[in-house]
Length: 111
Image (cartoon, one colour):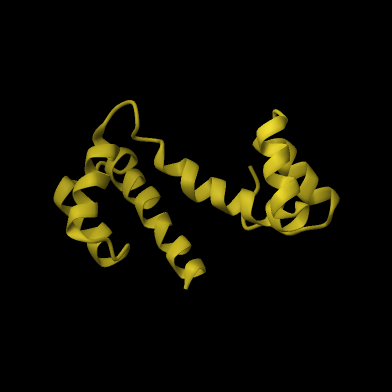
């Protein structure tokens, strides 16, 4: 169930693309979030506020891309060791991708 919910998170990223890149209207983006993202009405309001804020409108991508990168890296590294490294080292997304590639771990998307 958690994997399915994580996949639904991508709907907010897609909504950002619809709104900002494709120029779709707010109503169409709200409908997309409701139907495709299965987002509750109160969450749609929150998502729209974030998506329309010039400072935060790209922030949604950190969740979907970050989850797809961090999850396999933590599985490979181990939760405790992985979190310790994330907190104590300056690890970039590219460093995590290199670690995964060196270990032969496939990822959904590469940073």
